[in-house]
Length: 178
Image (tube, rainbow, N blue to C red; front, side):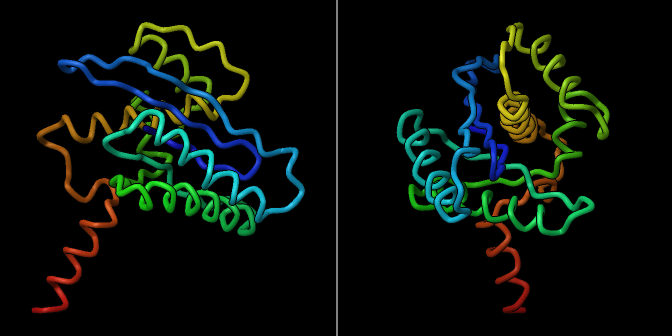
């Protein structure tokens, strides 16, 4: 399951890998624009992503890392949204992996600076589906899930290319002991 965190619109996408073929299971958004209070948004993210996890029972959760833009407040809000989704996964003991936006775009299109529309178009071609969606956050979530699949299925992939928080703790606790 891929999650594109947002405090106004959060995208989610579920894929199923069957004998190295990828199938689109579901995609959509959690629209939080009607919520006035930031903490109510975070509660909804936690609860509704948790419900999606219960429904689809994913093996892993892949989330997009917050990126630094012109406004640091936006990055902080995205980090909170990401944290609420991560907390939902961790509460269900589902492993969480994090990918930088450029890495996701590079994995899907070959260009780290690709637009959301280019990512969606490439996914449609790769998965042989038509994505009739209002918000590109949903196709971004599928891209995050696909990036994670590519990461797992590539024997030449760099172990440090994603952030698995459990691995991070294990690696760094070993370094501290030495």
